[in-house]
Image 1 (cartoon, one colour):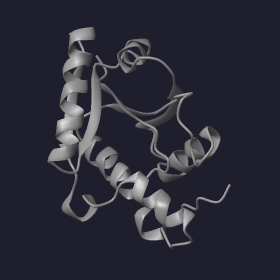
Image 2: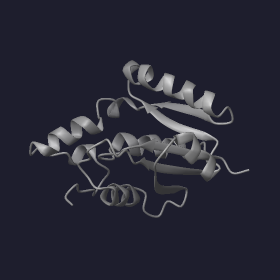
Image 3: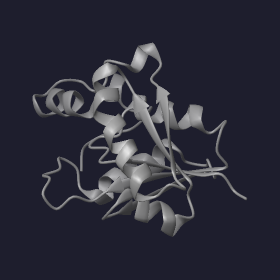
Image 4: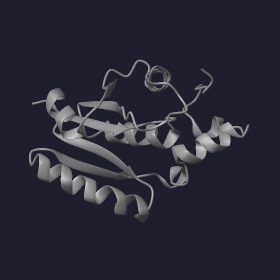
Length: 154
């Protein structure tokens, strides 16, 4: 049986921290689906198409990684994709405090799906999409925080 993990998020934008989690997780899973969650209540800086294109560019030529989008419950999406794992990155204890109850509720919703946490590498622990977005929107250079060669311009 194929070991498939879903790495869900809004990825607005996708950062080097996200990329590092996926690259490290490739050692554990046969396939990783970077799944962009669609939330109609949220206002995004980048369009869904742009976010998909950025992530696809970051993993160009890597057959083990797929980029998809979904709406609804993550466990329902996992079941549709026959994924038994949800992959999440942790930068700090605040992330754990946020992610742990979600993982526990997902386990309650579907006992067959496990959440796997990877702690970010130290050099990426300060990087988060919200801060990168603010730097970008205020004219700052975000190239160090994005996968090589990725540009945010639409």
